[in-house]
Image 1 (cartoon, rainbow, N blue to C red):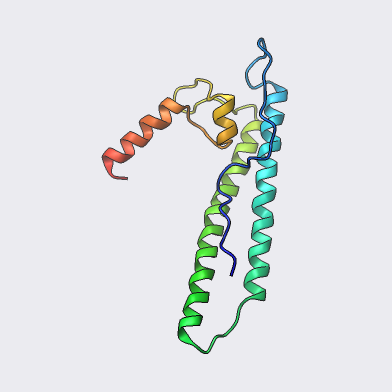
Image 2: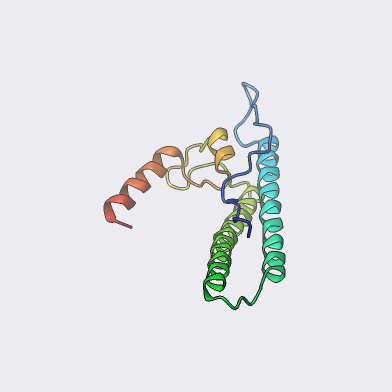
Length: 145
């Protein structure tokens, strides 16, 4: 049984955007760059969903041995949990594409500063700048949440 690939990381297959020195942040070219990254990521996730469905249909055996059956069920369970995380990520990708369409992308939801092109290339669905994200993580750690 193949191990479920981790697709929850942003795709690495893109050419990093190099803004001109006087280029306005989140102009049409930059927004289109991120739209393409997000659409590519979405397509990868959808293909993985299709592979999982085929795998579950093709490899579903009714093993007589309880240990074999348990191993298969555990593998299927792991795949389904991974797909559930990816389903949530797909929702976030779609919301991010909507933000691009609404011209509301690339700025921190908490403080309003630019998130930054490199951070967005690393995590295109980011909604917080590095400082606000760090602060949020510290608060979460302190509150145990």
